[in-house]
Image 1 (tube, rainbow, N blue to C red):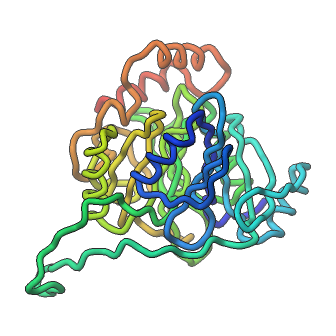
Image 2 (image 1 turned 90 degrees about the horizontal axis):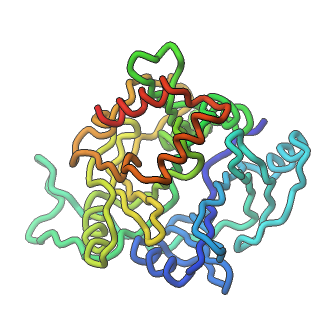
Image 3 (image 1 turned 135 degrees about the horizontal axis):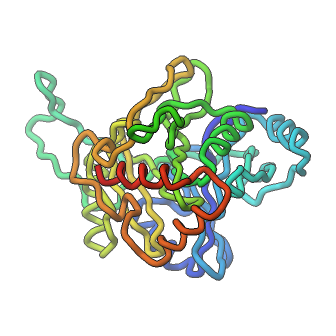
Length: 345
């Protein structure tokens, strides 16, 4: 129907906005706006905010908002699905249309009238490499401070209706696939994970803006935020560790997307990623195919954790699996066993 240009922001509810703001600053966000009922977070790049957190009774993910390239795209999409275009309360104003993907997750497509101005950057450190020294008579001392977020990079979502949900994002929002993952011995049944990007023609964009994978749950898995370089990731990680936050997995380098990564849990147990040096693809690359496995998630780094994989046993996880197997969806016993094997391989 349209081709979205990028993720705009992610929407959450949390009961304690003060605690959310403390973590946001420690993680490296800047505050775009704060009211008694809303907290808008941003990066240093010009554009839209990265995240809005609204005061609510419980901590939960509300859904993603994607950025339309033109205001007319919002109108055209609303007309095609029979929904109303509404004003949005973001700084500078704008318009949006509210949709639902086949998983039942709310998805907004927005066009902001006035982008936020850029903020001062965290400069990359000059590196001496091979025969190209850039630093002489000077030591290297990255400051122990928060990794300054530049922008929102991607969000990962879990769904029980993988094929239908993937098709919806491709058909409705004009996204395209960078890589498929499949289960060992089940490639004939199709993929169980897809890394998908925005289609901006010959303009290179992030390897994935959205990743979807089949599973017993529905909704948010993690979101990723770009920082300057590896030193920003590492020094910012030390800053977070000193303040008692939990690292979920890292530091390492992924295979699909190639980015340097470091994953953390916020006080409400949501997972967030610092990343740098990710792949950029234009529209003319064909999708890759690879088997899904825990060892295939990184080129180097520490072994992947159970916390990152979401395989820690709990009564809630068991109920989630049993509910998924009873309902009419794409998760059957063979798929579930294949996923369990992949996450232990």
